[in-house]
Amino acid sequence: MDLTGYVLPVSLAASLTMALPVSTPPNAMAHATGELSRRDFLQTAGFIGLAGTLLVLVMTLTAIVTTSKIQKVFGRRHGVGRIR
Image (cartoon, rainbow, N blue to C red; front, side):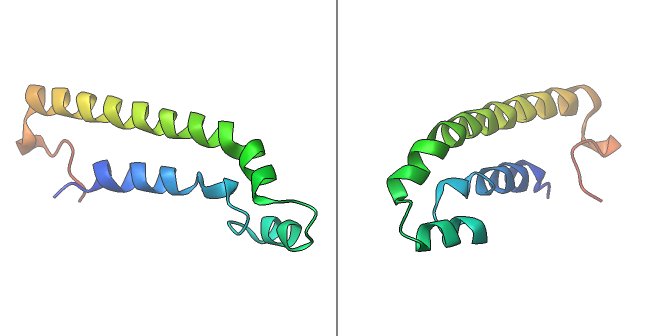
């Protein structure tokens, strides 16, 4: 069973959690001082998170279409699209 189509988008999307105050130790320390609020984090990283989500979606759909075209041409017997 080929899990690449599931694992890759999930791992890329998980890296977009930088907008959360507790996502990284430096963010948690900055938030703990009280100088920055959640709104500050979301305003700063909101655009990056949205753009990244759209990029992951486009990449995933492109990979699905490309992989299905390759499998139609070569078929599964040649090992295309399988993890060994």
